[in-house]
Image (cartoon, rainbow, N blue to C red; front, side):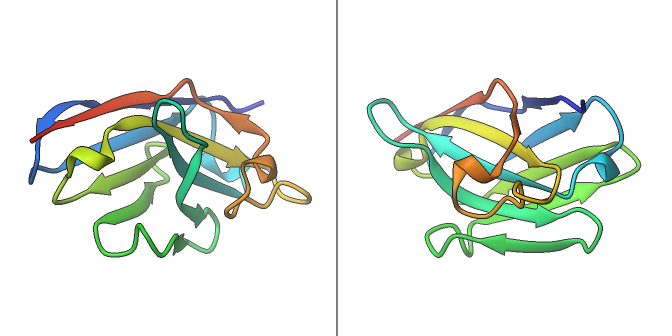
Length: 126
């Protein structure tokens, strides 16, 4: 089974940008979709965006539209999340999830993903 590993998090100042990476251990085509969530301490996991691997279509939460961009590089078996104009409220652990299709079709519900990476921490200072 393809596993996912996130990277690219760090400490940044407000207004900056980050690119988070989600590297698959095998081919991205083994997945139907991949998505990004984040979770701040004491809060539920929040959906941000997902991408349809074969169709290269991306979908966003209303709250993420505009500052967040999900993309993929199939030659590198990697999905990305670009975040612009970072705010202190963006401070959270960011997770990449994957879905193999069928009942695991990604979307807004974490239960529609059948695998997750370990997360990468993003800390934004004012």
